[in-house]
Length: 213
Image (cartoon, rainbow, N blue to C red; front, side, top):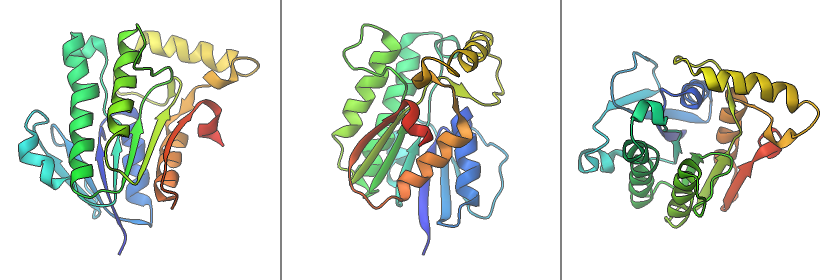
């Protein structure tokens, strides 16, 4: 029997690449993707569930299998308020992690952010850090948290500031500040999958150049 993966955030930059790689991976026989609206993706391995993230009582029992990949996230521009962003980036992800742990899912893989720190005075960094602390206390045999730098990939939405930052980062990190090297989403997705299959039972944070190793 192959493994069963759960994924939230499959419509995002990392999530899209992660979903493609999971569906193509021989170790996984089923990929359960939780989404807010139908994606149009069709694959023999894919079980896409359209849910209301604000009603965990309707979906919490469905988060079963071997691993939960969590790459959900939004921007303050899209969310409009810090409260809305916190609900997506912290509450939804924590509720899914909690459900997975309670249902016996043994492995959890989270995409966080470089600079995540629950004590930070910066809202975004503090929010990401608080999530890391919260999920680390759940009953997973294996919990891996990734802190990538700026993500490198093709986005559906236009983020002008991020595109400019990406160009600058590509140039600067060739010679200096190498730990801030942009993270290609295909590399990140592959690393997430590979470490989820690692037999080591541990809590681990992967950041900077370690993602490329």
